[in-house]
Length: 513
Image (cartoon, rainbow, N blue to C red):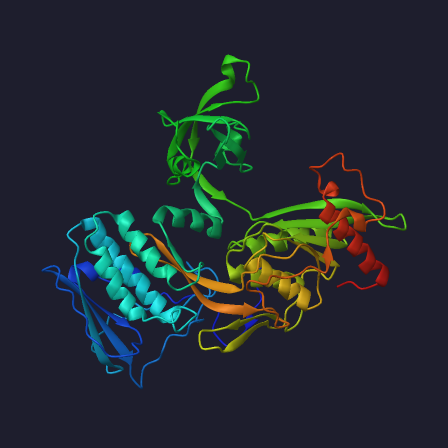
């Protein structure tokens, strides 16, 4: 399903490929970069601790320049509403559109790995300078903060210690969501956001009691599933290397790899643990593995008047790029099977791509409804609305939420609730009313920056407050609770039981939301 267009005060199209990438700036080859930023005062800084100096030339936009729009785009490599042109986006020093240059010189570390992190520091500082939601930077001189951090970083000997200095600099902003993550952590984040990886389709974790790496599950149809690997199997070796003491992320990196290559794994099968054949070695080809954020099921339901109906259950685990299309396909399929009401489960969904949340909302809403209101660093409120939306279904809808529902989950829940489309059942949500951009830096790390705040369509503040459900999910609310003997089934889930009860009430009132 192609998402419907949104109407807002800014362009929501993908980032133009013509925009220069911050990561391509030749900081160390030329010893000089130019950055289009807005210094609040003119100043010169120099550090004379080394013979070789990096120089940053700050330039202030003149009357003919076009300042970057913080909400120019939602697309590649960004979570939420990206910052558009970043602080390090301009390589041209001589444009007549710029004036009032400010030069900052700083010492090049003699330790190569620290030298690399110095460039990362400048990139991170510049992105914060241009896009952070608080233009006072938590009431501190952000330009001076670069000077202080660079001085602290210069005598260090390891990249880890240098990154700690960047994290410390970011912590002074007073926003826990503005942070830097390592290249390895960013790889895992991208897998979750893109919904695709190149590997064999195994989810693994360390068993707390034994410390062994065990298979949680295999992606249906993946090389691991086809080879007969099952959840609960113990992973012993990868390419002949024992895995003793290895954590799950390190093991996962060994399993991932370029499509067309293969990896050999040895597993101890729980299916036949008493036989010598319980240990097997298999060669698995690496393929593109699609990770769907959607799980769906049809729940048989008997109404109070004795009729047998079908309730469509859709669980959304994260807001990846494929979330809206996968959900639309699931709803279309259930519509053909005679489903007449729906439960959308957002419990323990921590968020993800905000644009994906807006696309999902359009599956359930019609018209020109406002989906969310954003507030930029200058205090301007920017409503984002649909344009001539057409819902996939108008059947009654209940949304399940809890304290683990955050960010994009709260945007979606607020959009559906405030527009009268859904009843909320569960517990108060997490309360993250901020939007981040994420930019990959030159060394493969990533910087998350809070670039905006948001309010629900009815202008409810969500940040540090959360969204309250219409109905708490406790079994006492039902007159005749179902048998709890099959605790793992959907029908025994107390919140789903309450949701079905609310759907019955909607139907009895003749109000298909």
